[in-house]
Figure (cartoon, helix red, strand yellow):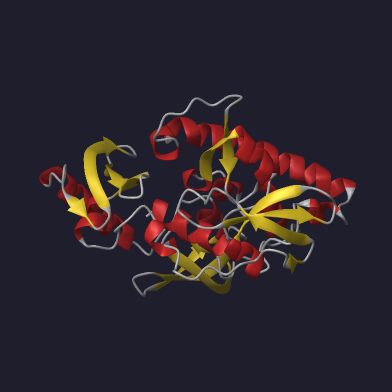
Length: 294
């Protein structure tokens, strides 16, 4: 019998997995899930992982409302919080979103309801607006990482980064909160200390699947991932914000790692300094993935 993947606590669209609920007639594992609307439903594991089921059924109603609003409301030129609406763009199939420019300079795609309801007020930078007092991490040690100095450049959404030296001798630029929370403990070398040959083979298969899905998603959502239309090549690289290695060791679905919300265009030097480390915590990735697929 193949090993059952524990989905408890994981989020799929509107659904959060509560606990295992037994098996269905096809011998598949089913899970009790709680929808954002409050309803509880039992869903097959394969249906969750493949994205076939994203809610208790309320998702269809919300999608219908969004489409109705899209067809009658023109938000071009209007301002919502820090966002100024530029134009309406096709998103998925017959769905549309609004291309908005945030006052921080970033561009993002937002649904009509997110703007008109006030639930989306920025590209995400409002959550990371630096306070007047910045904690100086210079000289502090976090597991294998020693902080050398504050990086000259913050992340795309304004979060502070630090240049660190790993005990193995490699340099990496790491976000403040991933150091303090203990999420990032090394430049990435810790992942391989006890790695077996079988692990390496499994990682290669996982990485190959992520790369294939990433290429598909980049073509499909290029405007979302690369709104400035920077040319990929020697100067600019396509990067996974939450790293592929962390996704593999955490058992994250390759579709989530390859999701457009986890992709960014980085200058070559920044990508080299990043050195495959994660610049986003898992909880944030899952939250963004859930929002993107709603």
